[in-house]
Picture 1 (spheres, rainbow, N blue to C red):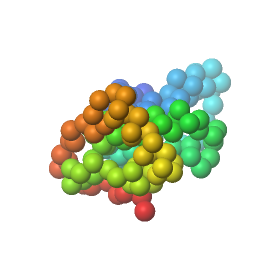
Picture 2 (cartoon, rainbow, N blue to C red):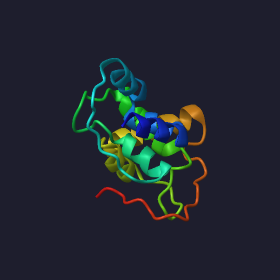
Picture 3 (cartoon, helix red, strand yellow):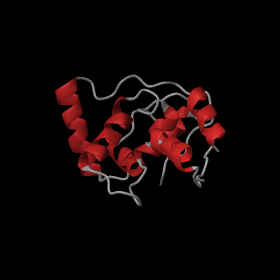
Picture 4 (tube, rainbow, N blue to C red):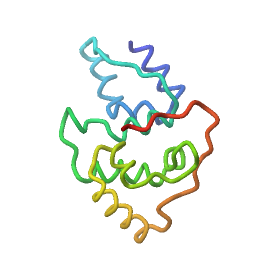
Length: 137
């Protein structure tokens, strides 16, 4: 497993830590304690990984802080890889809320803060030629 993590980390810099959120902790546990860590590997694109990470730990694990939730929403609004749906249309507040597992009024509030406080809330979207990601229903 260590070799798989290291290979994934080298081939997808910035994605694995984004999804795992604890790459160094995992590697230290393997190094220091020789632990076997059960994990689920989900195949997908960098876009899929970022979108998945935006809703991670909403239903289990340590409860997310408001800052964690706002960061996930801001990622969905600002990151050109995920800021638009597969047709190139910026996500609605409700769609972002479903993906990030937050309320749509919270998304509206944070979007307004992002737009008024930091310039354009929707950067240009990246057009995808790959298989579309499914939007949570």
